[in-house]
Amino acid sequence: MKKVALVTGAAKRTGKVLAEYLCKNGYETAVHFNLSSECATETIEGINAAGGSAISIQADLRDSRSIEALVSSVYDHFGQLDLLINNASVFWQDHFPSFSVEHLDEAWEVNCRAPIMLTRAFYLQAKAVGMSGVVINIVDQKVKQNFHRDHFTYTVGKTALGNLTTMLAISASPVLRVNAIFPGLMLPSDDQTEADFRHASQLSNPLHRVAGPRDVAAAVLLLTSPAYNGTDFVVDAGQNLVRVSEDVLYRHRAPG
Image (cartoon, rainbow, N blue to C red; front, side, top):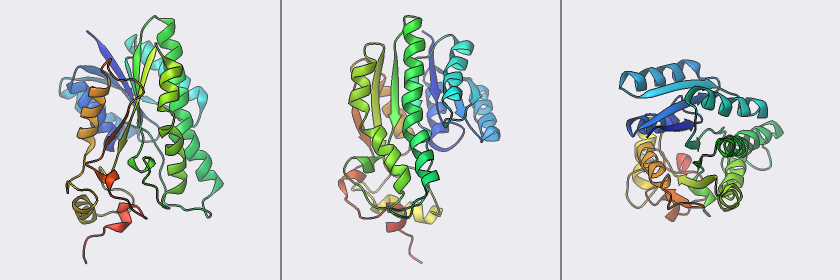
């Protein structure tokens, strides 16, 4: 049976791995991007060359009309949508009280408002054609009571999104099932070097390894089951068990 997924922010990094994994597991996939057109082209070419089926669609998630057009484009091309993964986010190093209003507004628009608007557009389209589907929001383990002062505006948006799982699951039923994944450190970020990342991977959680993008992708497939609705799923190798006062990006730097 045909299955179609839309992954936001899927041109590179974690979103790319999610798109590739889904295509290897029977999904035709829409790869969303905003500015990373070359990366999106490389991603879909790689998927299609490996025997999968993917297209890329540009949309600015700060614009509600662009969001509606994104979901409509998926239906126009594939005729259906079964899985929406709200993966895209914006991220800066900033703090309270020195953050900029511009960053706060953009973090709200991309990290929280866009997933809500995408879920609504998906709901309306699916209901109109008599189908159902799944939404999975990619959040952050820090929202599970592991807050610190770093990346303030990013975290504000993710905190709002992370606390919406139950409300959205109730509101969108029975048309959509809504779940959330809370990952930890997965890939080098900000000014981390590869050596910093390896060092942090060893020290940031009890297992001394990260739960990477493929682990998150496997969790996505699990949460598409009809057994899950309103589920918050922490996938971080236990990073959330280690309370910190600053981000592990800065807490664990490679010696020297």
